[in-house]
Length: 78
Image (cartoon, rainbow, N blue to C red; front, side, top):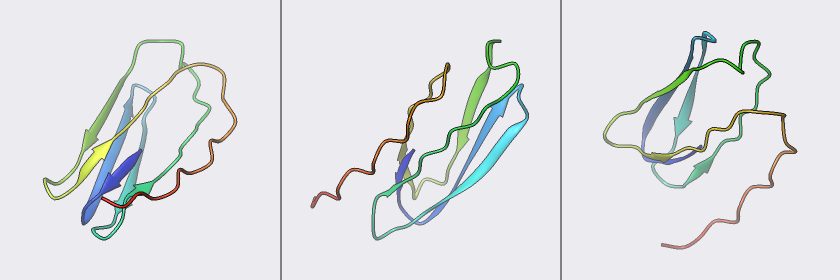
């Protein structure tokens, strides 16, 4: 996930009963990599994201065999 803006993004994965908060900063783009091994991941599920309007965010969700961690991308000036 990537986010920018002052606030907390809450991510929930159902029905796996997994949830976690991610802190975002106003002054920089934050990149966070989360990978988890969840029983029942082959079944249907839903990922929900709740974030304040002060936070811009994007996320990629995948399912399957775990992959190697990607290195963070260098910051860009915008």
